Image (cartoon, rainbow, N blue to C red; front, side):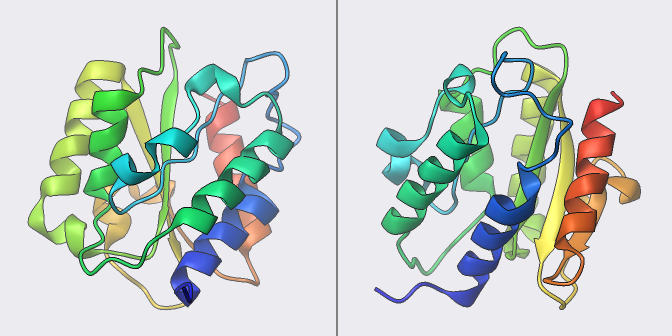
Length: 174
């Protein structure tokens, strides 16, 4: 199956830049992350890690490769499905700081309010805070899902590393 170019852009940003900050410490558990694809996150359930499972960027890279190999091209992709999956299937534990970094290209869910509704539920139940990254040079409307305008980024091939560094600074200064 041919993968959509947008999906490859998301994968490239995450693997090349997002997890590769020296500010993160996966080995001792002080930094925890999971990859949750959309659409239909439940389809990938056997491949989605639990929060303490990712003890290195290498494991996260292997995991995202597994998820990417299973990605299906569906006609109705919505970010809300990933948020719903996290809400219903992945408890982040007792961490005092939970950050949801959404990396996407699809802005449809931002308009109908569903993703915002699930984000609000994640904030209420687990105290999640939201950083959003849109992939590609064309603007879209995922900004409404970010906690603030300062927590919304557009990443391209030329600024991906800078965007990831900004995200790392935000997370490490909370």
